[in-house]
Length: 294
Image (cartoon, rainbow, N blue to C red):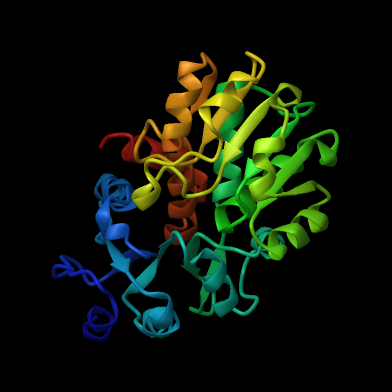
C-alpha cells in the first residue's frame, strides 16, 4: 500500500480492513459515486472490504497496475475516465470476450489463477437503463456522440439490438473511432460535423463524451438551437451522472424533450461489476438493494 500511495496524486486514509477494492481514474476522489455504492454493499453483505479512489496520471498508470496485481489484499474494482482503453491494453488479452470486442474495460477482478482480468459493464448497464426509460430500440435511429471507452461499450450493446446497424451514427474526433464504427457496422461522422445533422430524422441522442462534466461542465455536444429542430419524440440520454442536469439535458428540457441522465446506468454497472469482483453475480438484486440504500 505504501508504494501505491507514492504513485497516486490524492491522499488516502488508512484502510479499516486488509482487503480493499479501488476505482482508478484521473480524479475519482473528486466525486466518483462508486466508493459509496460499493461500501454500502460491503456493509450489507458484512464483507470486510473497502473501496478507495485512486487518482493516477497516465504516465504512472502501468506502475500502479503492476503494484495492485502483486498486492494480494487487492481484490479488484473499477476503472473510469480516461484510463479504460489503456488498462485494456495493459491486461494483454486477459479480458472477457465482450470487452475484447469493445477494446476497453471498466472493471478489474481476479481470475482463477489470481491474475487481474478485465471486463466492461458500461454497455449492458446503459442499454438496460435506456430501455427501462424509453422502451425498445430495435427500429430507432440513434446518434451516439463520443467513441472513447464508455462510448465503444455503449455502442457495442446498442447496435446488437438494432434492426439495422446503419441506424446508429457514431461521432468521434479521431480515426480510431472511424475504425471502430466500421468494425461494428455503424455509420461514422466526424465530431465537428454534428451541427450539420438534421435531428428530425433521429429518435435518440446518447452523449458519451465528457462535455457537461468537470472542466467542461458549461459545454454541450448539441446546441440549444439545433435541438429546436428535433422532433418532439427525440430522447436524450446523457451518461454523465454528475451533475444530474448537464447543459445538454437542460437544453433538452427547455425544448420539452424526454431526458435521462447517467445515475441509473451508473448504479447498474456498479451492481454488475461488484458481482464480478466479489463473485456475487447471481445476487444482483440483493446488491442493487444494498447500493440503493445510500
